[in-house]
Length: 172
Image (tube, rainbow, N blue to C red; front, side, top):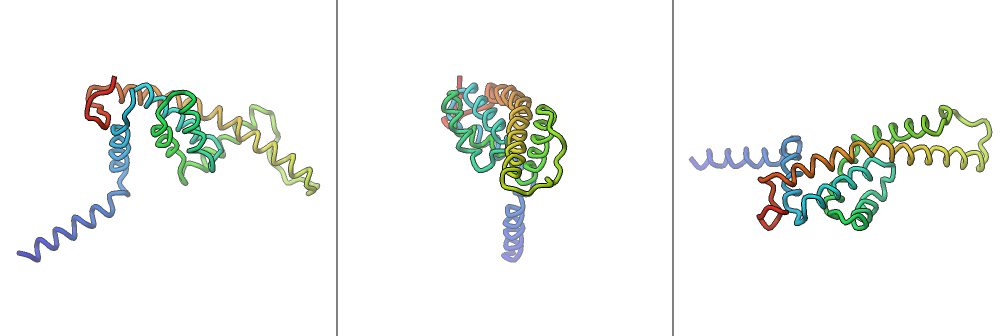
């Protein structure tokens, strides 16, 4: 009998170890963390929208700092903004950066990238400036629609009767 308990214990321990590979576990963890925020639904939704917006822009080393700073200025939830930047991850960053550049390239009317004939520092700096400008503009444009959708969905979720803050009471 003790062997059976040991086997069950090992199986449970191994299942816990691999749960992080399950998308449902991530979704439940995300909802749990949102539910622990002590804010009004509008503040949570605004913070999430800001975080997602910044997470889509090509500002990778500054995502959290920018999102939290904007949340402070907009009076949104700073923690929700920090959670929202998680939309940017190793799988999504290449897509966001490519989409940002292509949208910026279209809006600015830039030609396709080609290897420059002259490799001088000035030519390379100009080319780099055009790419960065296109990516920033494209990232802002690309981030608008997801941010609005996240705001609406998070506001609806945070305003629902079953959603509780960390205090266990529904937030008004």
